[in-house]
Every structure is written in structure tokens, then in C-alpha cells.
Image 1 (cartoon, rainbow, N blue to C red):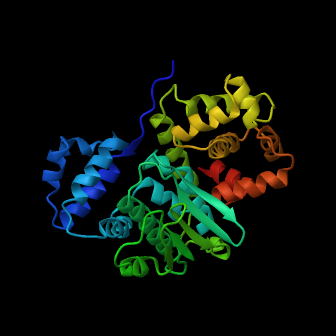
Image 2 (cartoon, rainbow, N blue to C red):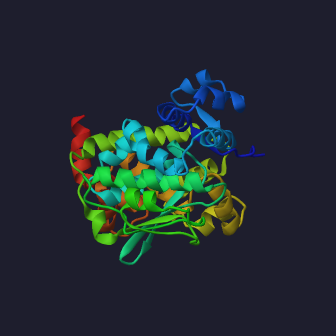
Length: 338
């Protein structure tokens, strides 16, 4: 029997929260004491805490802040503290903003596996959203403020949101929202979301390094693999996808669900509870298999493409460039020299 899944966050998040709290003159030690948290326990490099406990810490800190825009200000400051985090290091080394945003969603579980973010193609705009469950006003504002600042820093302030939506009601004074986002901010919306103009996705990222990106992504995936419970639905689905690919079968959702003796809808719900979508999981597995095959050099690029279910090598090349910012042949050449 699969053990019950417990949503969690990286200890980097509470450390960032407490650092910000201390800088804002908030008694962080008292907040930790209130929820029975030993601050010394937050120092484990790859440690996690439950999402419920982080929520409790968030509330304990926020209620001590004399700031009606606590979430906005925390989110605005977070990128200044978190630049060395693996997730943001991956984003900085992507070739374009669009690739960086895709990586943010793919590896978001490195930070938190609750309410996973998603990117939606809506014609002339790409819309970033995240799950609404357990999200209060200040936390929603923190996430979108952080995301907005990250986008601006990656593009050297060339890209700002086109529009920002919040599900909660408007505050008495929305001037801080206007200052931080520099865009139209709407409240009482169906979802928390941030929209970017499509042409902004091609904005290049200064000093992006494709070879370093490949190394960082490999480490990021290994870290996620260690975090995933061995009997989680995400882990079981990943293994079934690999098996189908190696057998030369297309790992479409109905086929994977049938092999796991579960309905497609039920499987999607199980994966959502694990903080991942089926498409994101499939994309991650195909990418990792591609990197491994090309690094070993035992298969041609065409053979790798067909192994992963691509009908043409050109389609594989296009997807591989989206994954890594480089072509399969360029990556193979770099790997052979390492």
C-alpha cells in the first residue's frame, strides 16, 4: 500500500522567511517558539518541512509584522536572498526567458510540492498560475511578487508583467501592487495569475551557459528523485513511462493508467496531489533519458529520437533545444569533451 503523501517545502523557504523577518524587526525566535519549531533544525541542506508547518510559521511571522503588504514585500525581497538556490541557478543559465519559466515550473518541487505552478498558452500571452488550495492573500502576493522580480532580473528589467490577477478582494490601498508589478492588477479574479506578452519569451538571458545548465538540471533531477517517496504515484508513474518507452510503446496517459490499474482521471488526480502534472512528468523523463543516452554516446541522435517517441529527428531537435538551449549534436560534442 502506498503511504500517505504529505506536502512539503524546502527548508530554504522558512530560512528565507526568517531572514526577511529578522531584517524587518520581527521577533523570529518568538514566532518559531509559538509553533514549537526548533530554529536549529532548519539548517539541514536538503531538509524539508511539512506544508502545514510552514503555513503555521508563515502566519506566526505575518501576524507580528506591522505591514499590511507583508506578502508583497517578502516576495519582492526573496530573489535578493535566493540567487544561489539550485532552482534559480538553473533559470539563470537558460538561453531565453521562456525556457527559464518552463524550468521554474518543472523543478518547482525543489522549493515546494504544494500548489504547483503551471504555464498556459493563451494566444498572445503566456499565463503563469499556481494552485489555489491553502493559499491565503499574503502568500499569493508573495509568490507573484517573487516571480515578477525574478522575471525582471533575468531580463535586465526589459520584461514586466502585462497583467496580474488575484483571487482575493482588493486591499484598501493597492498602490504597492502597482509599484511592484508595474502592470494592471485586478482583484476578485477566478485565479491567481501573472500574464506575459508572448514576444517577451524570446528575450535572451545574459551569460546563459548551456553546458552548465545541463549539469545543473541533472543535479536538480537527481535531487527530485531523492525527494520523491519510492512508492509515490509520481515515482510509480515515472517508472511505467520509462518501461513503455524502452519497449518502443507510446506512453500516453490512458496506456500508463491502464498499466497501473487506475483510470486516467484518477491517475491525474493522484499526480496532482504529488505536485506534478502528467505532461510535466513525461517531459522530465524524456529529457533525462535523452541526456543520458547522448552522454553515453552509444546511440545516434535519430535512434534517441525514436526511442523517446518522436516521429522525426527534427521534432526531437526542436524539443531538445527547448529543454537545454542547445541541439542534441552540440550537447553530444560538449559531453564527449567533459
